[in-house]
Every structure is written in C-alpha cells, then in structure tokens.
Image (cartoon, rainbow, N blue to C red):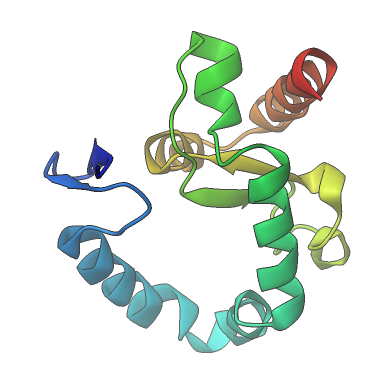
Length: 137
C-alpha cells in the first residue's frame, strides 16, 4: 500500500518521500539564480559536500523527518523537507555543521521564516528545538 501526501507548493497528490515536478523545477531555477551565483559559490560547494549530506541526513533521522516548527508550535506532524541553519552560513560559516544550529522544517515554515528572518526568529527556533528535545528525545 502506498502512502501519499500533498505537495506543499501546488497541492498535487504525490507519493510520500518523493518530489513533485513543480518542486523539481523550482529547485532548478533556485540553483541557477542563487547557488550558482559567483558570490554564493562557497556555499554551493558546501551544500554539495559529503560532510553536509551526512549531517543533514543525521539531523533528519534524529528528528524523525518531522518539521519541528509545525510539531511544537501547532501540534501538527508535517514532513520536513529542509534542514535549516538557524544562524545562516553568510552570518557565521563556522557553525555550518554544528548540530545545535540545525533544525528540520517543512518548505512552508522555511519560506515563511526567510521572508522576515530576525534575531527573535532565531531565538524562537532554538526554543522550539529545545522543547522538542525535552519532550521527545
């Protein structure tokens, strides 16, 4: 029996743990505009590194592939699509692989956070992560 979910972007019904075509196209556009930009090459190389792939996989497993923001804030279990750096790479590259600086989020929460990302948001993400760890780990 297959398990399905709705695409967070277009609402199309897709298989769990798979990506929708709109997400793939969006990722290609994003990669062209942002990741391959000369100013961002350092960060692009990092996201393609085995160190990041290993760490992001570990973080996803640690938090059971759930969006911690949705779970703690709204008590809703949502699949996490993103491992987010609470303190962004451009702000402090040395924290790029620190477990305390990483949180799992769904695309919706990740996009909403990045619209107006502030110090209060960073503090709130640390609090959400700590609350999850106290209750579930």
